[in-house]
Amino acid sequence: MERREFFRKAIGTTLVAGAGLKMAGYNALFASDFSAIEKLGAAYDLVAVMGGTPEQMFDKGIAELGGMQNFVKPGQTVVVKPNIGWDQPEEVGANTNPALVKRIIEHCFTAGAKEVFVFDNTCDKWVNCYKNSGIEKVAKEAGAKVVPADGKNYYREVQIPNGRNLKTAKVHEKILDSDVFINVPILKDHKGGRISVCMKNLMGIVENRYYWHGHNLHQCIADFATYSKPTLNVVDAYRVMVKNGPRGISADDCVIKKSLLIGTDMVAVDAAAAKIFGIEPDEVEYINLAHEMKIGNKNLSELNIKRIKVA
Image (tube, rainbow, N blue to C red; front, side):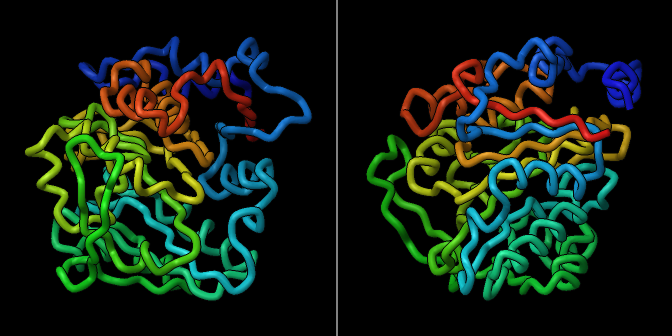
């Protein structure tokens, strides 16, 4: 598919009124004149893929980072943490695409993972979220163990010495006990956070997410990112909820963008996701705070980015 046709179909005239999407930012991430940031021979800071199915885009993207074997070693235990927070079907765009979750799990086992765990501390009733998102079914088909996160006994307290507002948090035991943590958020609108991506998705590994909302949400997101730095971040931007987030109402809230981001720097990946969403990274307070706190780099022009267009 030609690039012009891709953008016509994926964005075109179907944008939801009031979504505030700025096409200049989205185009800039994938435009051919942005290629100056790709430094040949150097390791990539970020891989951005467009135009394929979630599985195709992940296969191509992870290959550019040396394959999953660069992140998962034989015998290791892995947590794959999607967004499964809402009792909503796939087409609403509230939860991570099930096909992407399944493909990531498959790559982990191919790389030699001993066990792969999948969970989220959901907002709606967890049993319904796991089932109706479609993620529980495909994760089990791929051989992962899907575990709950709804009880206090699943969490242990950790210290956050570099936090400003957030000094402690109770973190799910699987995160603390596993060797590898793969963070797999879906990009979407969020009333409190502006957008929900990698750093925001970490709220699903702590027991009391509601404390964050009452104590400067953006600062708490940045604070926790000083403690928890996933091994790998994979952003599902195939179907992007552009209004009524984070839960969504219907498929009409979404735009099909057929994009995916992979990287190790949450700040960089979130900044690129902001571009795909149609806003500037500076419009998201927690991205600015995380950059200021030197958790990562929001300045995409300083990064070595590999852009891939799936034919």
